[in-house]
Amino acid sequence: MARSQKKGPFVEEKLFKKVMNLKSSGSTVPIKTWARRCTIVPEFVGHKFDVHNGRQFYQVYVSEDMVGHKLGEFSPTRTFRGHGKGKK
Amino acid sequence: MPRIAGVDIPPNKRIEYSLRYIHGVGPKIALDILNEVQIEVGTPAKDLTDEQVTHIAAVIDRSLQVEGQLRRAVQQNIARLRDIKCYRGSRHRAHLPVRGQRTRTNARTRKGPKKTVAGKKSVKELR
Image 1 (cartoon, each protein chain N blue to C red):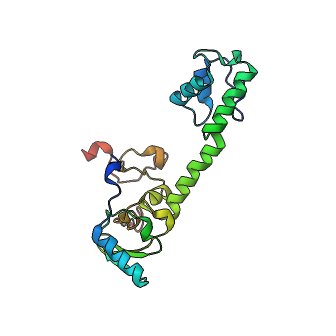
Image 2: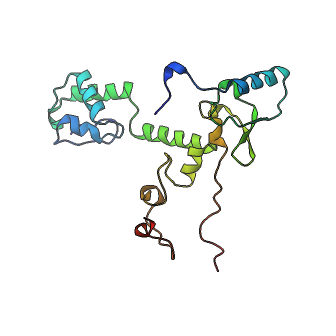
Image 3: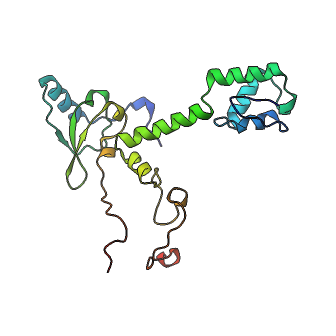
């Protein structure tokens, strides 16, 4: 079920603050984060995030099209190595 | 023979059903349209006057995305998901179910006809 409109999008406060700080200082170092559940808001556009996928940090460059999705959608948690080859 | 929104011509059915032959018009929208142009539900499509047909066409033109336009919009939405490399996009790329359905069995609509693999456990054995 979709989230209630009344609440507005879920944005991790800490992460949001970090982004704003980085923006005002003008640097573009990627932010390491575990906040996969955080919605991407317009303020994040043009920024880099290292989103944890349970094993490593997966670098995500946020573009305009990604607004409204969650950070976790861009950091795949499963490795698919293909089916049935290398069988002797 | 009425012709609305391009190529659609279903004459012998009641108008609320024949409108549904237009891609993008379903049961509800068909009734909404009839309501707006004041045509009685149940009129056979062939009995419509030219005036009524143009009126329906105008309403569709003004308020709805149908046929090619709609198909293109849907394709664009999918292309956007693919481009931004999100989870749903990668599922589309892999021709797998997008909305979290199981893929151990079923999912044949997305995966296509069965490809039998030797030595793979059948559904019966899974239980």
